[in-house]
Amino acid sequence: MIFDEFLGYFSRDIGIDLGTANTLVYVRGRGIVINEPSVVAVNKQTNQILAIGNEAKKMVGRTPAHIVATRPLVDGVVSDFEVTEQMLKYFIEKVHKEGFTIFPRPRVVIGIPSGVTEVERRAVEDAAQSAGARSVYLIEEPMAAAIGARMPVQEATGSLIVDIGGGTSEMAVLSLGGVVMSRSIRTAGDQFNADIIKFARDEFNLHLGERTAEEIKISIGSAWPLDKPREAEMRGRDLVSGLPKAVRVNDEQIRNATRRSVTAIVDGVKQTIEETPPELVADILDRGVVLAGGGALLRGIDKLIAEQTKIPVYIADEPLTTVVRGTGLVLEDLDQLKDVLVSAHYEKPPAV
Image (cartoon, rainbow, N blue to C red; front, side, top):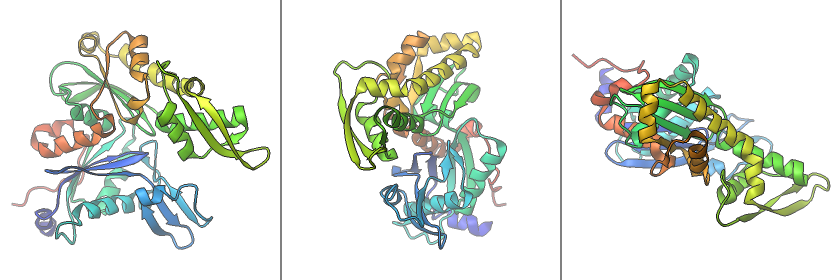
């Protein structure tokens, strides 16, 4: 334990947004230093990890049968413990590469979905501890996003944050440093991609890859009619002939394809507001709803939520990084913000 404390002096405390799609790492005193896909390439014959992050993402859909590029997190929770541990270890070591730390033992703050079970929570803690963390603190992603968006979470006023990530969408009403009401639904950015893949198959007998679907979502996806129509080319394999095929699609077609998933998110926001105490609803009406996460970048989703809830909706600055910036702000002032943490089972008592 004393050895851990000693190594801690040479380690950099880090905040991690352990996302289904991307993992972001914040280093205390330096800001965000890593933003890489949560993808790991594994050789199934030898169980050897071949690549992590950006290098592994390039392999998705392009590997021989014995090499599998997988996401160790599904819907924001650990689905493959050993691979998650290796991924965390890789990111922790990458942060410390520039220094002289041979055995990094940092304090780590990790954002987790609000709907996770105690078992899933422990899996994240165990993976981080096995990866080299000397203390593990967990914070619910909506709380981290709200702190990252500079919302007044510790005041006695209600704040509503909607964090639309890759695997989950989370809505939470926050007040006095705690979550008053929260909802976590497993409909988010990945589901939009799946909707586009299904649309291509049903409408054009076209088999699309996941990366292609994501590119189409980013280039022409929307939740609200656009001022200027957009088009994109959809390339994949013809399910009838088995040959390459390309078709042009417009924003309206993609909007219709993703409508059910977008509606599920809007309904989640409405239900969260319906279950919120009246005094806090009045605060939310004054302050508005703040959107964070990659899904907040879907064109017009703020307009749709505002139209459906009759409450002003704002998109956080740099919504992709709000959660990791929130973990970073907690790291910078751990004593002041310790009340917002979910748990810290591996916090070591101070040396006497």
